[in-house]
Structures are given as C-alpha cells and as structure tokens.
Amino acid sequence: MDIVEEIEIECPQCGEIFTIEVETTQPRLDLIEDCAVCCRPMTILVESEPGAVVAVRVTAA
Ligand SMILES: [Zn+2]
Image (cartoon, rainbow, N blue to C red; front, side, top):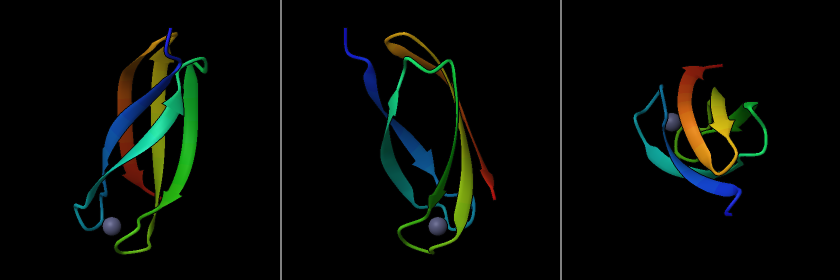
C-alpha cells in the first residue's frame, strides 16, 4: 500500500495551486507551509485513513 499521497493545495492568499506529499498513516495532520509564490504562510489540515486522504482544508495562517 502506498502510504504517501500527493494532494493539491490552493493558496488562500494568491490562488496558486501546488502539490504536497502527506503520509496517510497520520489520521490528522496540521501543517504550516509558506506559499512558493506569495511567501505567505498557510495552515493545511489533512485528514487521512491509511492509504487515502479523506479531507483537506487550507486556511490563511
Ligand atoms: Zn500564495
């Protein structure tokens, strides 16, 4: 089983779309990423079950 999944994130500040890799072994992941385009931070909440991402929520940090 593939535990690492790529998900698409849209920057809440500038709308840029990029992908990140998450481990689906974590039921709930809180990440803070800086946008590669506008450099502003965002909080990414990822809910997973083993092998699949079930929900992604992005908010401006
Ligand atoms: Zn941005």
